[in-house]
Image (cartoon, rainbow, N blue to C red; front, side, top):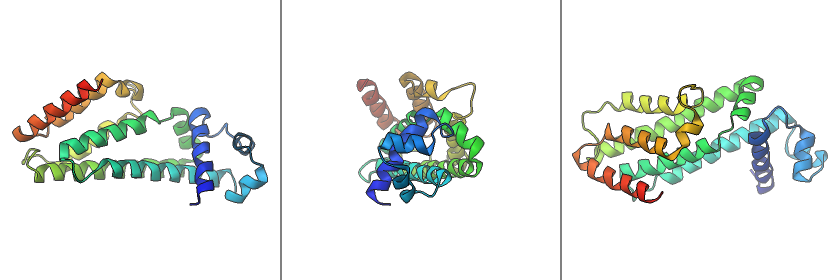
Length: 206
C-alpha cells in the first residue's frame, strides 16, 4: 500500500469513527480530503471497496500495535501489562456507530473483523500464558486453553454487553481492578511479587 492511499484511508477511518459508515458519502470523503472524486476513484473503485480497505488497514494497524507490545526483554507479566495497554488503546478508538453500520450494511466485513480480532487477541493471550509458565511466573497447573478463552470472552463481551460498557471498562479504576483480578488468578508465588511491583507502578503513574 502506497503512502498516499494509506493517508487517505486513515482520514476516512477517522470520519467513519466520528460519523458512522453509512452517512459518509464519497462526496464527503473527497471534500474532507480536498481532492476531486475523480482523483479518489483512482485509488478505490467504489464505496464498498473503500470500506473494505479501511477495515483491512485498521486490522493491520491493530496487529502491529499488539506485536510492538511484545518485546523480548519483558517477562510475561510486564508483557501482559503492555498488551493490556494496547487493548485498552484499541478500545478507546472503538466507535459504536461505525460498528453498528458495519454490522448492518457490510455483514461479511463485520464477521471477518470480529473473527480476525478474536483470533489475534486469543493468540497473544495464549502465547503470553505459555511464556509465563515457561518463566516460572504463572501457575504450573493452570489450564491455558480454558483461561485464555475466558479472558477473550471478557474482552469480546464489551462490544455487546449491557452490564459493562466499553466506557466503563476504560475508566482507570475499573480497568486496573479487572487487570489485577485476571493476573492474580494465574500467577504463582514468584509471579506475585512482580505483579505487585507492576501494580504499584501503574498506581504511581496516575
